[in-house]
Amino acid sequence: MTNEPKVASARELDVLYQKTDKIYYEFARGCGISETAYWILYALEVSGGSATQARIAGEFSYSKQTVNSALKTLAAKGLVELSGAPDDRRGKLVSLTAAGRAFSDERIVPAIEAEDRAFASLEPEERSEFLRLAAAYTAAIDRELSRLARRTEDTRGDAPQASPDEGGERN
Image (cartoon, rainbow, N blue to C red; front, side):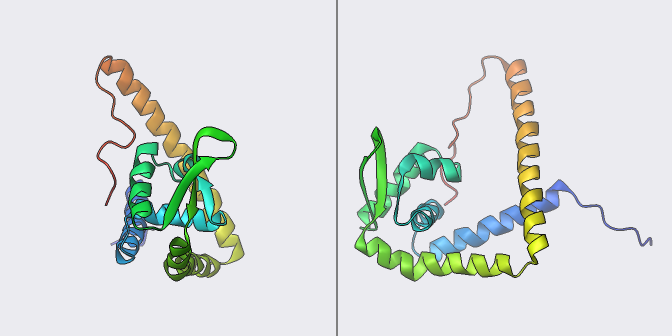
């Protein structure tokens, strides 16, 4: 048996991302909402109580349809309300209702505080390095998978294209 260090792989990172995703999925379910609804409420909380539907979709890389579907559920529960966006005739502004504020104070704010404590448990240099490396890896995987997708499109020609939200939410 050798004492060589184990070589890290992309699969290990994939497993860690999936574990993290599962943590948030289970937390959201424990709150009685979908994971998408959790991230919408999170976005509203860190935005001071309101944000446009387009901003939420963009920040979390969700399709407009996925956000719209989760917003309908949140609105039906009385947690959010939609109105016209001030600078965009077609856009929608999403805002927490009084019940949404209470729900966020009880469930979302403590989760954000827990994230902050977890992140702060790392040394300042570790936090900076982690963010730098995560951004570099995200950019690299985006480049590689985009290149692969273009090559696949070139060889398949008229094959049907998958929609961004094909398969729906992970909930």
